[in-house]
Amino acid sequence: MKFQFSGIDEHIKALGMTPRDLFGSEPAYELAVSLIEISNIWDDFIDGDHVAPSEINAAFYACLIEIPANQFYRQHWNSIHALMQNAILQFLCANRWENDKDPHGLELGHVLRYGVAHVVAQIVILAKGVQHAADVLPALYKALCGDRVEDYRAEIMKRGVINDG
Image (cartoon, rainbow, N blue to C red; front, side, top):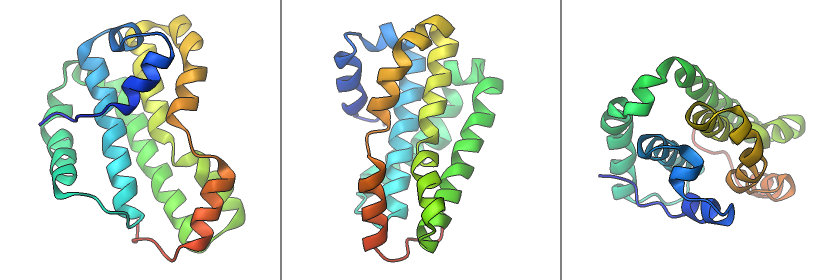
């Protein structure tokens, strides 16, 4: 029940790389794709956007079956797990500030909602080393963190309270 996700593949191609060039191995790439997709589905669900049942099923399957069995995740659990936990807590903070329409919180929330990008960056570091990460992360962060703060703020201000995150 693997994710069919082309978004990151487009960004990788724009860097002039293949998934193996960027992530070093199929398991590292699959972990990054799963985390990005799960975070996108979770964000859409919390924001009240339509999420197809097949997407929800794939996200739960990835969380409960694929990620725990992923060779790269298992090998680097100690270096990835705490970042994943932190990314979730950042997402919950951002959701609270969005509900409150807190101006300062919205500025921070825009950044905190991209916590999964830091996990993906750690995957790149672990898979290919610090120098490789230093070379590719500026472009990868821009690709993964595509929303502009002005657009984010405008969207939040026009919608009502989101699900209690």
